View (tube, rainbow, N blue to C red):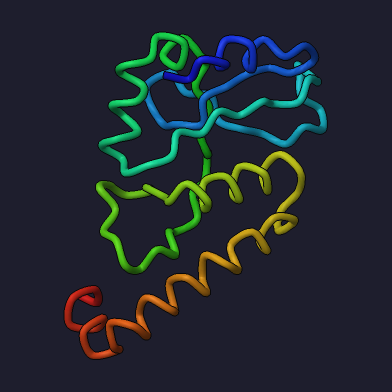
Amino acid sequence: MFEDLAELIATPGYRPGLLFPGDGAEALAAYSGAADERPWLLIVPDGTWRKARKLLYLNPLLQGLPRVTLAEVQPSRYRLRKAPEQGALSTVEAVAQALNVLEGAGRFDELLRPFEVLIEGQIAAMGRETFERNHLR
């Protein structure tokens, strides 16, 4: 699994980090004025929260990466899934928020436009009444 991960995280000129909350995770901060000026090479596990945790558990290279997290989390827009805990985001939301922290607020908000269209399409397919009955409690 992840045959090229060791090579990827050894890419010269970057500091690898695992974008995943946890004990000891460092809060991402804007590049300007950072003590380590190298850009982040963020590794972002994709999948359900349960599957992402399992990926970390099964992969010692991922476990060995320094963890980074978002200091302030905007509420999730993923209205079709229940977050397992406060502050949980979909992968695309976490990536967009991380890039906004690093590069400048709002610069990567457009990444979420297709995500919003996908959600609206799913709501339309199930019908507004079904959505409200099952997801707006």
